[in-house]
Length: 207
Image (tube, rainbow, N blue to C red; front, top):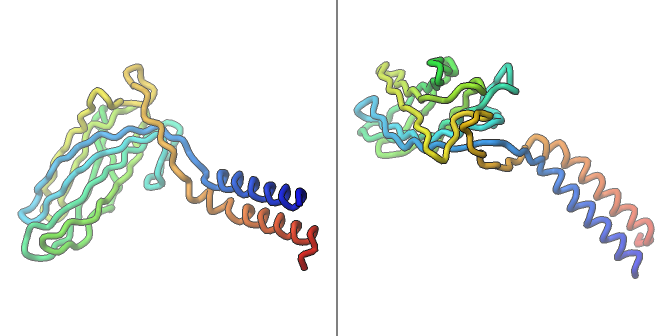
């Protein structure tokens, strides 16, 4: 009885270790700045700018030609239709930094059709900016009316303004699961487990 139990323990340990590897955890530095601003660019549409999270690693929504020297602000917002007819958001977002540079994804418009009295699901926009710059503001543009508004990003005492600067407190460490890595590892993990089970069956001559 000892040998089968020992073999079963090996299988369980292998499964636990493989599952741990499959999570593909990535440690990133990031902090979130609450914005909580309502913007009315038309008589029917109100945009709620919720927050911006500034991360040392991309979430996959923006490309940078120099990722080692980039940070990735991720804007979270939603919009609501206060009118009596269905409307489309067609919003364009831009970021500005401490040097006055403007960053945007050209021809990328946020916001689909929304019925009266309804809110959109929360939406995100990620854009890469240089690591040695500070995110200064978010520009919200209504492409239907051409109106726009600048929302400044105001950093509190608990927020940092740039990674690696002398004024930066230690950002929160967040563990994020990399789904692509997990998907790549799951097949060899299954093969290892199936092989161990098959070897166990052959050794005990259950068939």
